[in-house]
Length: 272
Image (cartoon, rainbow, N blue to C red; front, side):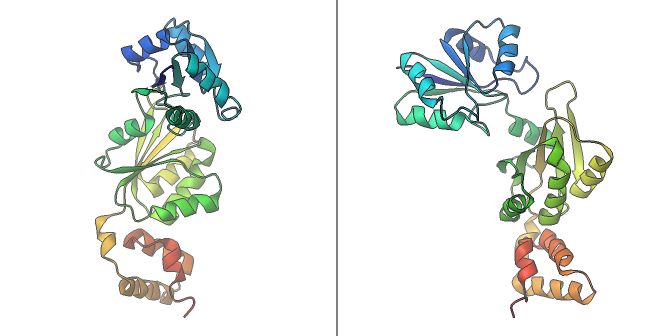
């Protein structure tokens, strides 16, 4: 019976790898990699001769048994495209299957993009919620944001460059104009950390085309939001509607200040 090693690899700079990780990658009979191209770049750089097989989103179910057979015959190292395997990548199914079948599973820690972004953001790091990638469709994306709108902890998530502008618009609409940090190409040559409010970020990326890999760190719901009761929310909503503010805009503004979900604010009084 082999051991499944979860080997963390660099998220950008190839120097961000531990001596233990290099030793394990050299000693195991086989490496299962989410991205064999990236894996071979790492292997060439450190003269690792271990055979590499692909294990990614497109073949994770059809190849699962094959990889488990290799694990039955000896040790196996699982690596993701970057960072720790099993975190927003297809490694979960293999890890779960190995645990269920009684194989030892050993983590070899490394740099993690969510934690790296969190600590460099300048936002509170004592409590945070990792959301992975936001949903691609707007309705699902807004639903997820609505669900975490009252969370006081810092939010950390990934976003693709071609969806960044749309997601920032939804973040401002649902969560309000919160402080955030947008981390781009972490540990790579063009690493950049942009800090400011969501509205400022939208203006910035309207002028600058988003490129690269993005990790967003968003401030949690302010503590004072918890003090808004229904009476106060209704009063604020009635006041804005009386001024001629559209209900959708009023609901967004109140949700940002009150801790209520935008949809709940919007629905107040509609069925009465």
